[in-house]
Amino acid sequence: MTWVVAIDKFRGTATQEELSTAIAEVADRHGIETRLFPTSDGGEGLLDVVGGPNRRTSVTGPLGEPVEAGWFADQGGLAVIESARASGLLLAGGDAGNDPWNANSRGTGELVRAAREAGADHIVIGLGGSACTDGGRGALDVLLPAVRQDPGLGRALTVCVDVDARFLDAAVVFGPQKGADAAMIGRLTERLRRERRRMIHDHGVDPQEVTGSGAAGGMAGAFACLGATLVPGFDHVAQLSGLDTAMRTAELVITGEGRLDATSFAGKVVGGVAALAQASQVPVVAIVGAMTPGVSASFPVISLTHRFGRDRAFGSTLACVREATESLASDTPVPDHHPIEGET
Image 1 (cartoon, rainbow, N blue to C red):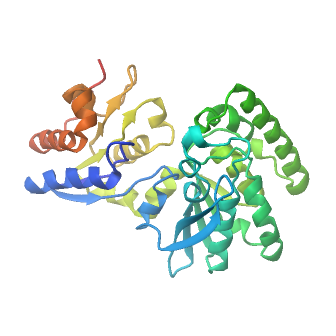
Image 2 (cartoon, helix red, strand yellow; image 1 turned 30 degrees about the horizontal axis):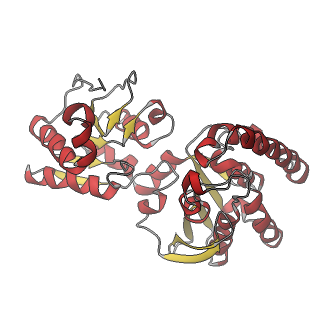
Image 3 (cartoon, rainbow, N blue to C red; image 1 turned 90 degrees about the vertical axis):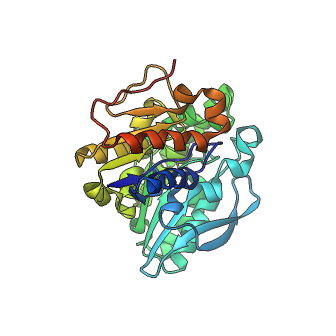
């Protein structure tokens, strides 16, 4: 019996590594082999898929302060960076500490430049968790001089996005979570319109026509103007980690996240893992912290809040995960008609 475990973090209660380890410990007691795969939708957590950062570079943080940003490089010319490490909302103090108008993407551009200068010929950029809605202007200001000296730089970039939002929608869709009120969202959207006109004039590329160009406050659109390839983050990460091929030899796939909602099936980890498992005709089950009422899934979902109560689910998350895993280990293989547990 082999299980593939590809579970996302439960934000605020348990890390991806803690959850995977808890599941593996229970499986091991039942003689079940596990293969653990760090997962990401292309944003935060992307570096974990390649083993974590092995380089550090001082770059400009989202509000102008210097930050030490970790990134990854191998001997084969691959580099992996996360915008959250250089231009992240958490670096700005969250939505309460952020300055939505002045937050910028310059640091992410500096990371890309550093990776290229270190010899990378393929740079994977994970967009997510950013503080900025500058349309990628900060990153462009850094990279345009580099592109003039190195015309192949743009084509060396693969940008992982986890949203379908277009360039001009970035402020409306993501501004509130970055601390922007209604008036600020209006100002940011007008600035995005100006940036769009500038990109069309300077680069001959309309970022509004590119799916996912609104990711990271429009940073994805800026990279598209440089010639970067935008890809669905989860799909690219699955290939990078080998998760897509591991599915074929598993008897069960376990995934999950802190809260299952409608967005879970729109480019996020749970929906992506489930789709891969179902394509390989392998049973899949999700262990989640909670499940939004009205959301349904085509595979079994175990909600810790529903099974153990909110206080225990949030206060003793890993213990609850172990108990849920015990039930799976006792009942495997999980039948297709395994009941879906929702919130009450």
